[in-house]
Each structure stands twice: as structure tokens, then as C-alpha cells.
Amino acid sequence: MFREMRRKNQEIPESECMQILESEKRGVLAVNGDQGYPYAVPMNFYYDLAEHKIYLHSAKAGHKLDAVQKQNKICFTVWEQGFRKPGDWAYYVRSVIIFGKIEILTDPELIREKVKLLGLKYYPSEQDVHRTMQKHLQNLELLAVQIESMTGKLVHEK
Picture 1 (cartoon, helix red, strand yellow):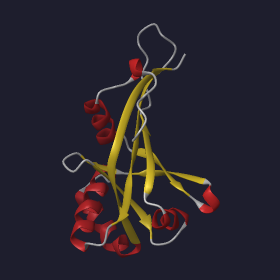
Picture 2 (tube, rainbow, N blue to C red; picture 1 turned 90 degrees about the horizontal axis):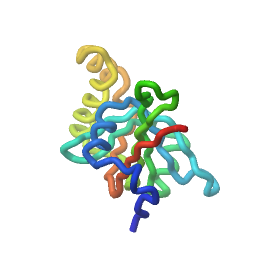
Picture 3 (cartoon, rainbow, N blue to C red; picture 1 turned 90 degrees about the vertical axis):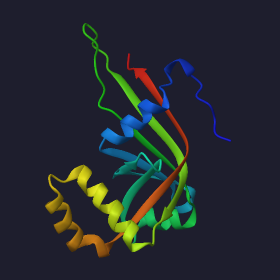
Picture 4 (cartoon, one colour; picture 1 turned 30 degrees about the vertical axis):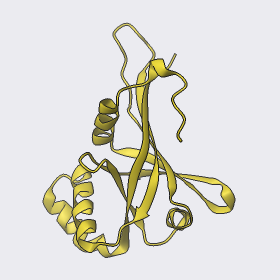
């Protein structure tokens, strides 16, 4: 159903893909936007390793939410800053591309649980997460991406 990577020699194992999803802070969510144009937006996210799902938050209205309500198929991309090997000027960069289906969650307890985990990835303390949730939880939607395909690769940018 999904294409295999063309350059197999650059493919990284699924375990490395999951490590990148756990450690990196931002990705780009691509949806089918207005008039069939792609709409890609940078997003903070939380990867739940046990569930193999990506969680994202959204405002209750806007281009992104309109798009996912019309079409639940998405692409999500994450990449690292990269590294250089000694004596080499060019970076090595690992990236992950996910295809999946996105849904807007409605279970209040699940939303609280996942928003807290998302917040803990970014905020300095649990108290900060709690304060922010009290202030903003009612104003957000929580989106879950069921991963259907995940590939990763390592490129040498030279």
C-alpha cells in the first residue's frame, strides 16, 4: 500500500525512528488543505511508544482542524539537527516520515492524560504543566495519529 524506500542503503531501522520520535521536539504535519492544496504546519508532538501513536494539540478552529475533519489521511515528518563526523564538513541527518490516519479525541480523561504527557515533554516541571492545563485545556483539541507506515533514513548532506 505504501511505497518502499527507493534508496534502501540510507534506510534506518524502526528502533532508530522511534528514538527520533521520542527525542525530537518538532515535526511538520501535512494535510490536504483548502482547494486541494497541501497544508503543512510545524507542530510540537508527543510520541507514545507503547501505543505507537503521535499526539498533537490544536485550536478548536482553523485551517488544520478543518482539513483533518474533511480528510483523515496525513503525513508527519520529523528530523534531527544532524551531526558531523570528525574531519567531515557535511552533516549526517536522520529523518522519519509517517503516513497515518488522524482523529480528534473526545474522551476527556484520555485527553487530560495525553496533554499532560505532551506538556511534560516541553515544560520544565509538572507544576507548570498543571497550571497551563488548568488555563488552556478547555480551548484545545487533541489529535491522535495512528501510524500506518513509518520510514526513516540517514543522509549525508554533501
